[in-house]
Image (cartoon, rainbow, N blue to C red; front, side, top):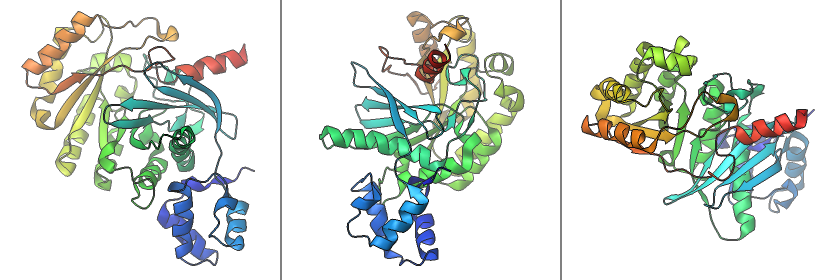
Amino acid sequence: MNKESIYGLTFDQLTSWLIEHGHKKFRAQQVWDWLYKKRVKDFSDMNNVNKECIQLLEEHFVIQTLEQHIKQESSDGTIKFLFKLQDGNLIETVLMRQKYGLSVCVTTQVGCNIGCSFCASGLLTKNRDLSSGEIVEQIMNVQHHLDDAGNDERVSHIVVMGIGEPFDNFNNLMDFLRVVNDQKGLAIGARHITVSTSGLAHKIYEFADANLQVNLAVSLHAPNNELRTRIMKINKAFPIEKLMPAIDYYLEKTNRRMTFEYILLRDVNDHQEEARELAKLLKNKRHLSYVNLIPYNPVDEHNQYQRSDKEDVLAFYDTLKKNGINCGIRHEQGTDIDAACGQLRSKQIKKAKA
């Protein structure tokens, strides 16, 4: 039986666990420092923690559960990691170099059941949720990679936009956010963290009530039910009439700007008609809305979709702007490697089965 990842415990959970097992409260701070500030890879390296506590930790937890299976490096500095979990499953994590810092995109599930018709992540259905420790460890492995390079670089931003639907793994997601945001450890600011959802309306309410100050992005990709249902089957369960009231609740509760992700698919959702319809849909919330227009990364298995022409992308952008909608066109990274989320994992699994 595999031991639990120590990274899965929040500071409060670690403190309670150590006290329950007969240790003083200060031990939690010592262990936390070794994990997230000194970033050791072995309990035995925690040289100011007594042997009894080290032995206890070793009996119940492990620090490293992810094994680097493949690492792809792009000419623009983007690095895509394919990690193997203890049970043999594969997940992707991506390090992106931005003008504002180093951002890591993490995965929350092994596979995905949302089934968006354009997405490589959903090519393989969900096998299981990741534990909070497995999500945190993605950040730690990337940080260890940076540490080993000796350039004194730090992960400064996180986007929860990898394989899986984060809100379908809600409790583990929330523990992950509390760990990476903890000011005694990695101290990655809440406003430097963005969680993306395909639109699980009931969880948007819950996320708003949690009041974490973490950014929220919604994968919209279409301005009406007919088109959105065609490309995103989740719209059957959470149509726009259910999704928009949840978004309104979030905006009113948090007063935080929300990002709407919109992948442009040639001759599907990239016409002026959809741009005007999207502007109308967001009109009453435009002061707290930002539309992120995303060039499509073609996926072999979804050959019914193609990237929109540059002229159509710019026309879509101009129409939103003219209608008072804040928007931008996402800068592409990692285009010389398996750029689409889930693409590397899918290729490796196919290769293994061949």
